[in-house]
Amino acid sequence: MLIDSHAHLDSERYADDREAMLRRACDAGVGAVLSIGIGEGPTQMHQALDICRQFNGQPGMPRLYASAGVYPHNTPEIDDSIISKLDSLLAEPEVIACGEIGLDYYHDGAPHDVQRAGLIRQLEVAAARKRPILIHCRPKDGATDAWDHLFLTLDTYWRHTGLGGVMHCFGGGWEQARRSLDLGFLVSFAGNITYPRAQALRDVAAHMPLDGILVETDAPWLAPAPDRGKRNEPAWVTRTAETLAGLLGVDAGKIAEATTKNFSRLFHVRPGMGN
Image 1: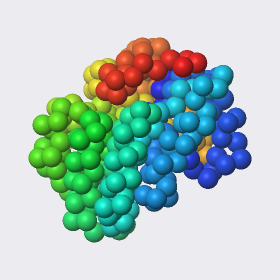
Image 2 (image 1 turned 120 degrees about the vertical axis):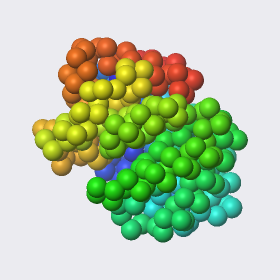
Image 3 (image 1 turned 180 degrees about the vertical axis):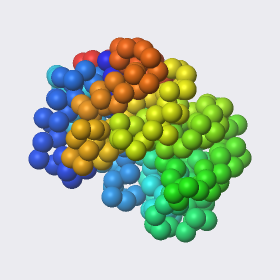
Image 4 (image 1 turned 45 degrees about the vertical axis):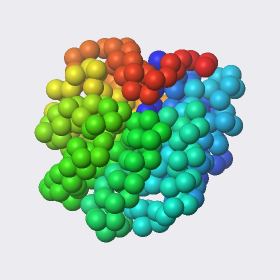
């Protein structure tokens, strides 16, 4: 069984075939999916939970979990009502993580100081609710400033909680991977690990310990090769797992076993086919 640890199931790109898409995932051996609750903005972060409740318990479906959080670009929208909404969602049993949250310096979506302040507020809510976090971190090409600021923030406001989290769609180097593991985080690899120009990322993945990894799609984005550019979906997490298996010199079953165990340990759940 594989787990897609990060998919945006509430995307409008699934509006016409969401149920069929989830059945394809189950048929491909994907036993669980973490549905990311950021929506198109903070007022929509409940949609991931709604999808969980719509499909969980139906035969032929993966087990769905949800997260909730405010994406870095939307941190200027954070106010007391948004924080209250986030807190209420994290109190729900299906909402097992806070995210995706973090820092994005690649785009000019929000001032950097606003992003950091928004991240800190969400870390405080997640800590109070004892929920691990899902981190988005993207610096400008060739820079490490977003990573540097992220680790400073996590060292100050998160490490002491012992709750850990996931470095989602990891795109850093070995130094960032090492520091993530030291913080008790899992490092999650997406379909971009299959892209021809991603050799540096594959070099990092080849040195990862089995107990420190997850796989994800980030669907509907980042479809793996050879379908890059198409709408991605959770069934295709198998391709990322196969690529990771080759890099680590193990069979795909070992990747499925390790990543499922890692997901279960971090989020204190026991996902299984048909659950």
